[in-house]
Image (cartoon, rainbow, N blue to C red; front, side):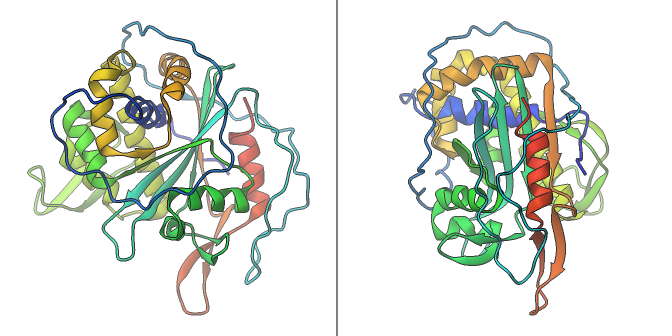
Amino acid sequence: MIRQSRPSMIWAWAAIAAAIIACSFQDTGQQTLPAAPSIPPVETITETPTITSSATYTLTPTDTVTPIPTDIPTSTATPTQILPGVRYPETPVPILRDKIFPEGQVRVLVVLVDNGTPNSPRADSVHLVALNPRHETASLLSIPSSLYVNIPLVGMERLYASPIFGGQGKLLDTIQYNLGIRADRFIAVDFEHIAQLVSILGPINVPVGAHLTGQCTLPVAVNGQCTVTPGLIQMDKGLTQWYLRERSGGENDRMRRSQEVFLALFTRLMDIQAPARISELSQVFRENMETDVTAEDVVNLTPISVAVYTNGRVRRASFTDVEAVPFNLPDGQNVLLLDQYAAWNLIQQVILQP
């Protein structure tokens, strides 16, 4: 079952446009920022997309657009093997299939990193973003970080642990093995540095989807509690960080909240015409996130980012307990077991449609 919310995904482009803008330009003499998040080195990624377009784009100022998720059509794609349902204690099999991605699609893995846990960093939330320039659409699929999967050459572990064994490259490998899909690029940012981006860019308007109350020490707290209600809520650095780190509501709610913040960042970047300010903003992003996005990617992805910002054609979904089944391991730990067949069906509907 696909969960959609009205204002959503385009911010994922925020992260993409943001990191993309940030990645590979000369220093501009901007203000000195905090040290970049400590994230292990990235493995060599064996599937590197070749992007040949050299298009340029001039951004025309436009009013802020609230994205409207599009309906998800019935997929006609079929796997090239019979996939198992949820099984334990058997190891998930690697998914082998023909590549049937929409023409010209670019896939980016956006990872929110938690540097505050022992033996970390770990992937706190994982989002697969698919950009379809030909149809001017975008898709966002959130994957639970506590999914119990096979990490290649390591064994069965939670998805969030995969960067510990080889950086973001190992996370890419793990998603490819278990879900049969590989991202072309990645963006990784931790809680501290995403809050720093908000501090530099200015307050963001977050499309909050559900009521949330939790302990906090911010100036807006009442009796030690912070509260946000559904609607467009302006958040500064502190409130943004609290909103992302709050554990109330479980993993599904945390995936939704991180989607909302990424969307708000994307919208903020487009509002200030970030694509036209690459030289000014490049240092900001290079200091605040890790990514393998290249300068050529910046050029090629600017038109689709602007198109999605303008037309709001976004498809957004998350794994539910259909694709990620709650389970207790023999030692009592709570995990989510992958139903590969259900997960593949969701990927077809969200990612493999133009």
